[in-house]
Amino acid sequence: MNYRNFGKTGLRLSALGMGCMRLPLIGGRNENIDEKAAVALVRRAIDGGINYVDTAWNYHGGNGEPLVGKALRNGYRQKTFLATKLPAYLVNERRDMDDFLKRQLQRLETEYIDFYLLHALNRNTWKTVYENGVLEFLEGAKKDGRIRFAGFSFHDDYPVFDRIFRSCDWDFCQIQYNIIDIDYQAGKKGLLQAAANGAGVIIMEPLRGGGLTQNIPENIQAVWNSQPLKRSPADGALSWLWDQPEVGIVLSGMSTAEQLEENLQIAGRSGTGMLTEEEKARLAEIRRLYMERIRINCTGCAYCMPCPHGVDIPGSFQYLNLAAMINNPKEGRRLYNLLVKDKGKAASQCIACGECLEKCPQRLPIPELLQTVIREFEQ
Image (cartoon, rainbow, N blue to C red; front, side, top):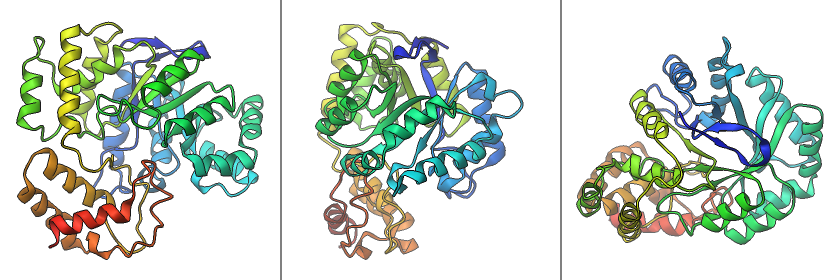
């Protein structure tokens, strides 16, 4: 494993971080974690050199933090910098912050959190927590030792990122950034701003929820195949990130031992300035081709769920994007009908109540986009 200086924290953190948002499941249900497999996966990640483990209050329907707590028993906590997040979207008043942190420390079986983030900030959640004294809360939690470093994860436009970043001397931040999302949300501008001010930067969605490694269209695969070093799509996309000195940690939500081992190998040979100009040009071409195909900018985070009317919003968008990316509308319709519509979770159940709009970190016009799904898959 390679390690990188992480901003002004003075710490050396593993280039690859273990994201615990997509742990192994039983029966395909997000809240039903395969505990034995998940504990083994987290511990193998740490044994493989990863020293940053990330979870959150809402991961796996609230079961993620307790699972991580179990995985870090038997000495693994001492080998790890642990990160979790205040669910800013659930905060209504100042005392909520202390209540959540107290419960998170209990769930994680730890006396302190190394890296504590305000989760999925956007203009609305930031306004709420800021007005309720979140900066004072973070300062107090650092002083009394409940947390070591304070940061935030972000899902909104760059001007909102700039406003939040300038509000405080943040230790670190977490942004969505990959070969596709260069000018999206905080993007490259946010990356450079944070790094220039000494904040460590954590990258989330480096493979866009796995979408950059699955069902790759022929013309894009041809570009991957044309590279002299024949990097896999995962290798190329991750290496593109690690090539940039401003990147601190690349956080990957790995679900299987195979994904973990591949990413450990890639991280082990990562470094800044590792890509040739020819490789960068090919990656730019891959980005251009993908941008021509993706129709809905959804990463499948499921923050919009549950829908009060039963719509499987991420699933609906997943199969619309899948159909576009692999250029196979018939297959997209088949999977949609099999895995969404036949389970009574069709897009046509949407009544445009708007409850999902405030929850979506990507700020997508969900009811409007569901109408596109209906036109393509239900008519």
